[in-house]
Length: 405
Image (cartoon, rainbow, N blue to C red; front, side, top):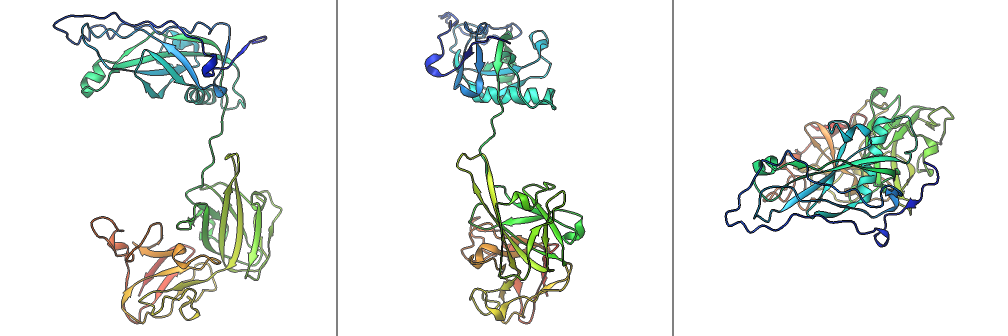
């Protein structure tokens, strides 16, 4: 692999290759002929393949040319070509060995293959074969084409499948390229006092504010929790850009254990509010945590008031993790509207209803409430919970279950 010249497949530097196509045919009675699909059509080896290294991560495209498959004469068939790649030398003689087919289809026998797509395919093939290797070396890559007649019936497309010969690119550099970071759909928390330590509790997204998440947890004095972006993804204090406590009588510090657990000096119910920011290069996400004393409220017609954080409508917190939060009695018959109060956020961003016994956090516009469902434009009306005068809302925020009775 020494003294290889690095060939960057940028458009201005890709040299033209020989293009081979079938001759025109003027047969007055054209017919589709599947008798030749078992014969290989010709995929040409690029003229510069032998003496250059293809750097796929830095390139835009790799130009390939081929002859057209033989489907009979006199018909201008619309043919699609798919690139198949392997890093196993055996692919030249045994095309059942590990390989992958790129997603993009090409409709010309002269095609500019997406270099990024080929790069990712080669990386995945290498990682699958060499899980303990950190870097992908310069190595040969083997390519062939699959072709079929497009725009026809499924039967014709299947019967017209035909394959080219396999070509070898002796020197190819594929590089792992981290995808752009995106906000997780939700976060998770875990701890001995959360769902008895048996599972990871989902942290719901704030409605209408991507990258913001919230949940309510109970921790005892000195209690520890960890968090993650996936179920079982152990992250601690050290994976947060900042930790802030507001309106809560506790300190939150790094436990100094292997997980860098977040330790709460004083026990009680707390609201965890995670905010996040994608880095300028779009490769990382920075998370911040604000801890509030937990508060939950009812609101709306059934509660008799639409004022946010009305003390008269606050739910009473239990003294234990498995206890129930209890609302004041509803004063008017109507639909349940309830929420967790998170800092200065509007109440409707952290609203919930009860669906099949479980808390369902608001994730859509509710122009007329949870019950609204006109011509399929609203939510399923069964998400709406009707409250009678004198009933109360009971919620287990540890298990995320509730009922009105």
